[in-house]
Image (cartoon, rainbow over all chains, first blue to last red; front, side, top):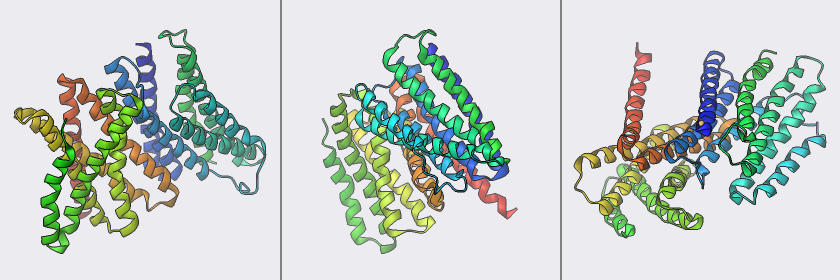
Length: 209
Length: 211
């Protein structure tokens, strides 16, 4: 029951964020808001299937490519959004530190091979690695700016927080299986729900610069 | 066990003859319809293969695997047509619908062979439900692709995103159908209502500029 409530809350938040960013897309006709709407929409769609599955079958999907594919699509939209928000001087800026993200997702991919499907794990690692690399690099570049472009850092921080929560969720789901609030899985899931909120103000800061 | 390749031959043979004898302008319609039935046949094979790979039971195969495979297979002839022939929007639209209709027809034919033809009311609902669902999924991907491919920055993510939306819509439909009872009826009605509202909105949008 707790899992259903947790996912239902997340779904409501996602749908709310999706509607709000869709309204902003229609008002401003800006590409970034459209991409954020796609991110929220794709994630929400995968979650609808997940929630319905829990509600009707009292358990999570065992093979589960359906929700995973929707969530992967949402991360892909996030990567396109990061690309759209590139700062000047981005093409020549090649620091070493952002490679930590792909290295981390590769290690995690090898770790998750013990539980999940190989193909889906590799796909997730590639997407999360690319997303993390882009977020870290743009964050470092944004912090070097002295003007309003420095505001970009908040959006990339939100992306990194989202990634961190996602990985924390996956790790906890491997070790804790109880259906009570003492399970850290639900804490991280509630935290992830709050990271969905942070995309909106942080992107607003970027757009209004 | 049913021999679905025999069903395919029975459906495709008259259509193939019609392609050869009919008017040249109407040929694409028949070809897309046959492509849709062919993709449904291939999907059934691939579905069986993956179901045995994952050790999935009937419900898991229907709810978790079939939507992914079927929607991906349905996209292939459309992608081929869009990439190789680069058609106009109108031509692409009819291609989308005939591939989807072919797919739904073959699926329904197989369902009839397996489950019989006695329950008229349920078959009526299933016929319209499955037909509408495949048309909705085809329209999501097809119309979406026509929009997405005009924007280079959205091409890859957009195509994958659209496919995922279609897969999830299909999966939700299959999930509701697998429950039975009132939930099944709701599942059957969702695509029909989506098609009806889609037609309504399209007509409204068409009316707007002429005011």
